[in-house]
Image (cartoon, rainbow, N blue to C red; front, side, top):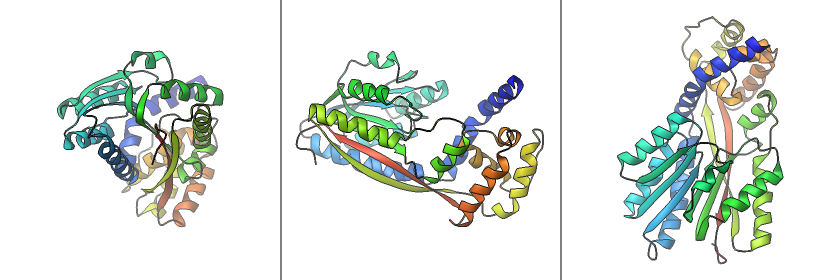
Length: 304
């Protein structure tokens, strides 16, 4: 059992960045999310730039910095000063985000660590915008989430903005991930809603708006030719398939469940998983449907 676990960790470490890169090239999720954030932040800027020229953003789980760079350019276009704080677990992403922001002239401090821990104590400045995008999954303890919300909201300025974006439970990715990831899935959307609403009842200084961001993940056009290959090659750790788009299909399937298909094959769940994905793709023109829910929190009494 330990040897399988070690092998899974080895494969996961090798493929995590490849999964993410493959996903980015075959989805419109990031484009749709960026567009949503750009429009929301521009409205926030327009409302506040006459009385404020210096803004502070705290981005929890900032990833590889593509979105951070996009946000930084938005503030530069509006000729506003921006200090960008970020927290990220992946050391490579920490460097990437900082480099991207440095390259466009945005003052930044990106720390490596778990933003649910004591690292938040490092940030003493009041922040104008809090961004938490796809980074608070699998919080099993609702009371811990509520405590986190209360602590972080106290760091936000009057007239500030908090934005949480997470995959909806009825998204194809979450429906599949819930069954095959092997972890206890938590409906982060409902938990966040409850925690934020509790804060609103206690403090009455903010309002909450829920918005949906719908997107798709595109699978190769020749998936019909790949299903048998995916089965055969995923049972053999050392096998190689030269069929066109095989690697793309394999990495997309692994990205969804955050697990190498070889490991799923070893556990006896591969055939069922592939069958479930195949059924969805055949009924959705070779695409999986994704939906994110955005919690937009306005920190003033007369919120829009």
